[in-house]
Image (cartoon, rainbow, N blue to C red; front, side, top):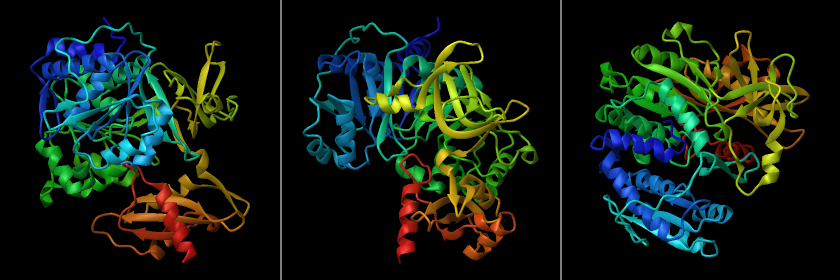
Length: 520
């Protein structure tokens, strides 16, 4: 029987493979039976604290066995989990706790800032702080049950989790997903990658990042072992490469910038990792420079590479299987075709279809429930209108610009904010970025428009490939050979582009650097 709850998908694996490894965090390994037992005891305790249908629990834990137990426990108690970045400023976390009305927060006793968070959240709705103690883990602030949690009547449309993302206005928004949405994604994703009991999935993504939904629930629904990569190791390419080999990771889902940094450390002829166990690599969240992608495909001919696209609001709504021959990989890389249970269209801001197949990308299907506590913002991006079948449904405007080609394949054309006007010229920042990424020595690039109206200037920040050298003038000259003069940016060569907690390029920090440089 097809599951309609995430917990049912996990329960099916527990029944089949109770002794098989479900979760590793470097210190602790849990079997499926142990994961189910420990999460059940904690779920019963959370129910005693009042957690149930309609209630949300915050999980402020680093990636660990404790975090896996806590997430599953909240769902089994009947609630929805809200992952909070444990290294974020306490004031920001307290604001999210207040915004989401969290009455239960689960944190770790070995995390810096926990006491500061308690103080910052003193005026919040939190009534119960549950603390994970030790590697095992133990729990304080809750009385663990000795039996299964009490059954709660649930349906697939019930809220399963809320992921907070940074909005374009700088105000975090809580993206709500139900069990049905998540199951639609993980069942397709597991099938697409042939995920199975033999696999060891590398848990790269932070738990508050939407890539973690695949790591957790696609793995557990198919009986794979999820190996959680700690945040420190993830920051050092050599350490991450060694970890992938040591843990015999077979499936990895991460952002392109991590793979670009990892590439020089994965050359066995020079003492790097061989990654022979890696059979599938999935990337999402950013544009992948084609040159390093071709290098990856050439280095790992036995590995399947996938480009998945979708905002947090849709999970993944398009997918593209990368050709296995490097020379056949198109530049720029397409985002592919629509995933099951999605209909896509290119339209204007009101959702009216574009006759030329290019415009804002609208998605209909298994999209989010809305933004927590913000109907106005939800209404700004969700509109009801008829699809190809003539039936009216709610469509979501991703805010991304896309184009459908004659073969039915979608191409990413940039963000709404990527189209800027400078001295009367309409300019695509994405086009400039893609030009920079084709430069021989460039590994990563980001382009920004900085300055007051009338005095704006294009600034590009680039990081070079390992062992390569290039001056800002040389990179700028490369751009001038391809781009018109008004699109050639000021170039700044940096050791590494700053990153957000989810591994993406931190454009806010780059903008601060650019403004500081302009003011100097």
